Image 1 (cartoon, rainbow, N blue to C red):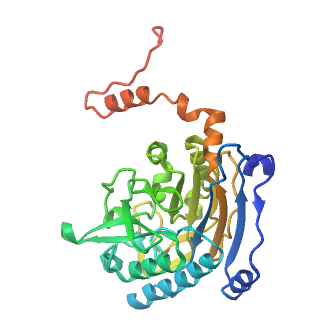
Image 2: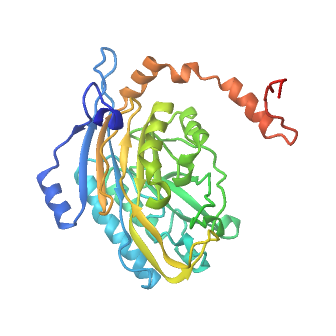
Amino acid sequence: VFRVLHGYNQGKPVAELPLKEDVATSATELDLDVKAYQFRAAEEEMRPPRKVVMGLVQNSIAVPTTEPFKLQKQGLIDKIERICDLAGESGVQVLCLQEAWNMPFAFCTREKRWCEFAEDLETGTSMLKIKELAKKWDMVIVATILERDEAHNGTVWNTAVVVGHNGNVIGKHRKNHIPRVNDFNESTYYMEGNTGHPVFETKYAKIGVNICYGRHHTLNWMGFGLNGAEIVFNPSATVGELTEPMWSIEARNAAINNSYFVGAINRVGTETFPNEFTSGDAKPAHNDFGHFYGSSYVAAPDASRTPALSRNKDGLMIVECDLNLIQQVRDRWCIQMTGRHDLYADLLNKYVQNDFEPQIIRDPFL
């Protein structure tokens, strides 16, 4: 059963790595679920291993949502700084935080006051700290925040910012797909992004960021793969009642279909808001979104995956990956080589036309 649900890497379950003694001690002090694993590739004669250590962070809010916004934001910045330092001490080279990491996931409320958490990608309070930490630890950090786009009249976007190991902003990706289901009232705050499927070439790997709801869209995953991603992160905020049956499947499927590594990150905890809200789904008014169930994990192109972090605790996942595994899987399965992108492009080009007619061959006896 374990082999079916988690796969085997090089003929064995994904190997667990020991934690440094001081890291384990700090994790206990912070009440942090820290796990470490290793994906191996076959040894090659012509290429040396390409090992990269990635990290995933899942966390709850730091103080109640009734506290002043400055305290809420600073509490999260302080919490993430401690976890980033622990990741740096553990040798993490590429770290991804959860979606909207520096605020409560308040988009369920439809209250516009939460837009105050939006900030500039270079000079915002949260981003200044992320840039400082990236430079301190020689680490690439992916931080998804509300972006305040001053060049376009202060428009708000849900944006993943990729910060390089020198503390520089390499680039950004704005969320492609915005949910309109249950309490996910995000289009009250921001709309679909306009940055395509960028892949960021960093010191350690070529990475893409498929933000949250984009994981339900197969072609969104494909876009990052076509542009050469080796690791795609999926920073998310999703609740148990709605998506937990899908969670363990989607990132693993994406890793298989596109032959790259996927880091799936989800926040933790139940966030309660001062004012009741409804979402037009016939449910009575309520104050919380539901339980964010964490369970972050990494999936590999060979269909193997790590166990997940806790459903209830802040956590740090540390994973060493040999990127040679990507080409080894592609050579074996030939998924990319046998893809019929010309056929897909032709169908999609027809589908977006107003006069599109589905290719249905009808039984003449009907």
